[in-house]
Image (cartoon, rainbow, N blue to C red; front, side):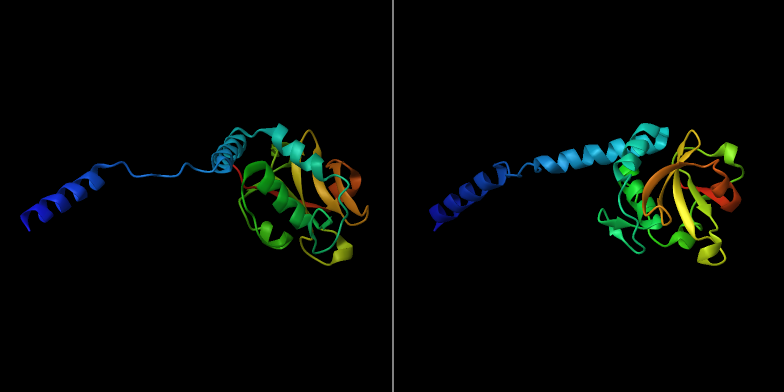
Length: 172
């Protein structure tokens, strides 16, 4: 009996001191973590290049009211996908809900890349009805119902100036 107890104790002590096997993280997991950190740093630095690159990758995607894939996007879905891909930040909601986020930007001269710009398009009823993402240098990306696709347009264009409703800053 004593020998069995000693053998069992030796066996158990050997198992307890053996290193445990921990499988390595899949290669993609480390890459995902690095990518999210890069997006976070880009957001903190106000990195315009990533933002512009993401927005340009959607130019020409068809406008589709309620659409949320590359097969068709509306303006709020485009805004959400740009933020997700450029900054790793998930937004949700309609144009009116997006208008409630962040803090207001007083003047157009104070706009920074990544600010959301909002418009009142009278044919779509009263109130805020259109959103885009400011890219800097007087340009913004939006899903244009009248052109039927995602475009990058000058904010200073008379059409947009007449309908400009304000901007919101979500970053920094």
